[in-house]
Length: 223
Image 1 (cartoon, rainbow, N blue to C red):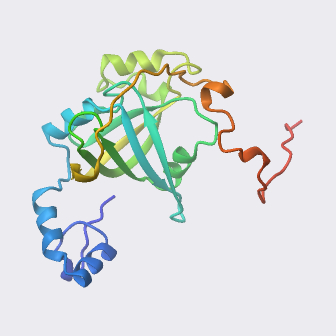
Image 2: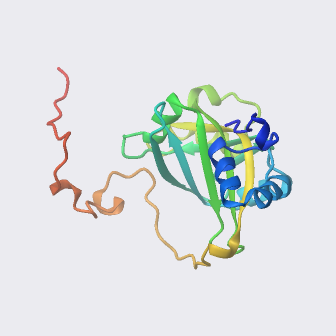
Image 3: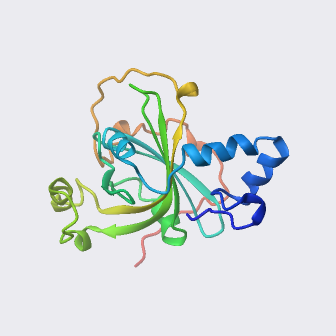
């Protein structure tokens, strides 16, 4: 996601035309440029890499080729998002609801926005923006750059482990400050990875089954 603005009023700073326009209109352009110069990088520095290695949650946004957005959540053991180097992240896609909204968007439009939030210690967040691509298990099994732990996960049967992986080329990395992030307490919960059990998935929590929708059709298996 190379969002560096080339127009002369922005002086080559990163960010969209819209954000720079609003910075000037609101009188925030000096504060914003100080942030670009002091807090934003085009790579992950060692402290950012260490921060990601300790996180078990990821909020991520993608958009299709028309710019229609989707925001999703990923969870795993601390460090489930692997740092391959200062410009590359790698995370597993586990079996979900079959919609594949995030992967579908990535297949059309590689731009991705990721937010890691440490709710339990520092209450600091880390934004990582970049370009994503999909890596199938069979392609990655012989990748010499991957850790032994990743190779073990790739070898797991697809019903229980990752079916594929997402590789992110880092283009922007910057802090989300702690002042509006709550400090939470982590409680134990049994995780049923990849399950189709309705109770473990949360069932029809929002009672959506009985709500009208314009696309309701009866699916028939092809003959």
